[in-house]
Amino acid sequence: MALEVAVKAAVGAPDTLGDCPFSQRVLLTLEEKKVEYKLHLINVSDKPQWFLEVNPEGKVPVVKFDDKWVPDSDVIVGILEEKYPEPPLVTPPEFASVGSKIFSSFINFLKSKDPNDGTEAALVEELKALDEHLKAHGPFVAGEKVTAVDLSLAPKLYHLEVALGHFKKWSIPESLTHVHNYTKLLFSRESFEKTKPPKKDYLIAGWAPKVNA
Image 1: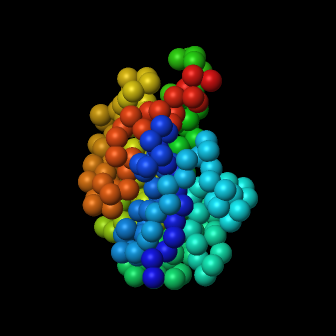
Image 2: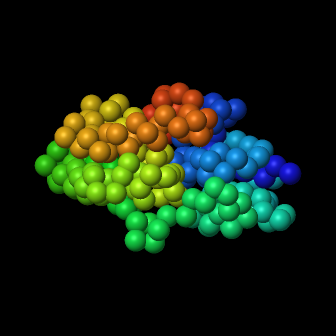
């Protein structure tokens, strides 16, 4: 039986998959594990009553396991691994936190109005650390096979690429060849093509309020 999954709908297009990287992480995991699922697209600025009844906090993503709606992508991915162990996507513990500060560094830089506040340098440092790691262990974080940490990083790196390209005309330094190779590998996966926002405009519309705040 198909799992029920509620994720963010696109800003201004409630019938279209939205731009939430945590929702995409869950969908990527389902796709990689070939688990059948039924999608509920949630307009986060006008949440349906049924959704708030089963999920009073109103957060996405949520997945229904055994009649209970479970929030939090970390928790959801853990349950999916337990219930659907094939193919295994567990990241070795020593690699589980690789790249974990990239997303917050990206947001700080994206929202920054002062070019000299160090947010760009902080993001470059995080990306350099990822590049070094991939040079030693790649092409993926844990070697030859995709694992959970890659499926968490892929949507975040996509947001970074699209949002910084649009709002700051910025791109990942060319010298970080391992990161560039990594994003190419991730973004070209069938699972990624199927679960990313269908238009970059949706992602840009999602970030605009934060950039203009």
